Amino acid sequence: MRLRRMRRGLALGAALALTLAACAGDDGGDDPAAQESTDDGATDDGTDDDGTDDDGSDDGEQASGEPINIGVLTSFTGPFTPWGIQAEAGMQMAADEINAEGGVDGRMIELVSADDQNDPDIGITEFERMVEQDGVLAVGGVISSSVGVAAAQTAEQLEVPLFPVKSGAEGVLTSDSRYTFRTCLPAAPMTAPPLLQYAQENGFERVGVIIADYAWGQSVRASIEDTFAGSDVEVQIEVAPVTETDFTTYLRSLQEFDPELIAATGHPPGAGPITIQAADLGLDVPVTGPYAPLATVFEAVGEVAYDNYADYGCADFSSDSYIELATRFAEESEFSFMEADAVAGYAIVQMVADAVANGAADPVAVADHVRAGSFDMPGYSHTLSWTEWGELAESRPTLSIIREQAPPDGVSPGATWYPEVVLIADPVEPYQPE
Image (cartoon, rainbow, N blue to C red):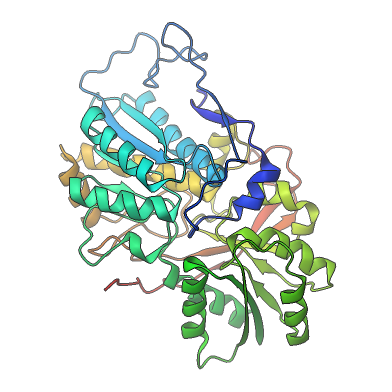
């Protein structure tokens, strides 16, 4: 069946000036240029246009119990839209598949979606509404770090599980967190070890870095300086304003350094321009991005991305489980390529459903079940498990580079590119907040 609530009409050109504006960190501002329109696919009689009820069940199928409400709090407008729509799509796919099999002990899963608009205050308001009016057992999908910090505080106060998909800011978790669980992007201090591992495995001796002069960029910088200290890899770091679009000066400085790899992970808005401008200057080396949606990057950067643009995520695009999942995703959704954000969204609903199937009757019990559990979810490059405070305990960031090649059969039909996994990092030691 077709996934509902898919957002159409993304302004992808605007989205990349964005897009690379996000993931882990942000400056807290909205980007009204990246807007979306909705198409719920619902008819006046309350059924989808594929003949299914709004709860995802077939016509005539009656749920035997109260629905299981799960909140989707993410960005459907603003700079984080490409991440948000994928996260929701993955969550909806999981809900539809579970409902098609009769639900959880006869109870249908219903998603309650809200647009946080990259605004912390709106994120808090919508989270509270979902809990108080809709009785959600859990909330997933947050991308923005500013929203993530605010929503996590609310989750802890209300004792309702929150599953951010991105939101890499250190402040999302505290040592006392018990209801917030990262699902894809680990904390910013955990971003550098995979970069060093990739450099060492490829015999690189020099890595150039461009970071943005704001919280996320400086956190990435600190992680790189700490991780690379005492290693056999030399680093040169350039600091640019977060609003910079012309990186020629910074790249020329790196050109003298002769890097074999450029890390733009700490400058989300600049990762696309850096990739293009580095190629223009003859810097024919890979550029690592900020956990961005690969399809959106390719739309904006084009063929320059081939063999040049690499990015991190939690999905193993080469695995059989990802290919099987992504094939169904291409058939059932309005997207041809399944991003890591959708893989994480799918896992969130599956884990909440598993908690309910194992007797969790309220949000506190769902959180307890998840914290004590270990989940091998399709498409993931690592097992999902958590520290006591909700950090990913076995995170293995996966670096994939865009290649000009045919995708596996059924995945991203008609595409001329597909990511090649070049590194599944060793498990990264969880960051422990003070």
